[in-house]
Image (cartoon, rainbow, N blue to C red):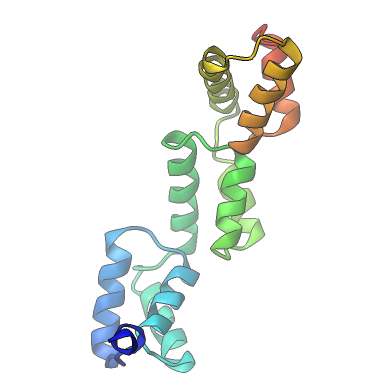
Length: 162
């Protein structure tokens, strides 16, 4: 019974293309995500690359559009910093230049405001009495969210959370 779960069924080209189109239409995808899914469906390298090309031509797959949507969503909804967003995109094998261009779309005032809001909210929930330990915990939290240390220091100093 275990063997049945790991066995892949090879799809025809037309079926694979239809499934891939649906997969891409459901939400924006990185090329590598689609490539991995096609391999998972039992297609071979030549077929995978051919289908990727078709998906790009028909605009079902657009790496730049995916990158911009990823950056926007992770910043606005999840409140991630640029470092964490960049790492997530690198895991999806998005080119560095495309990542840099997409990160430029984040408004710097909104970015600093997000750091400030997160710092104020977290500061209230840290039970630590020692101010140095409290600050360390706060900085660690913000760094873990992907924000840069220099901006964290700037926000903490300006917000009197220092």
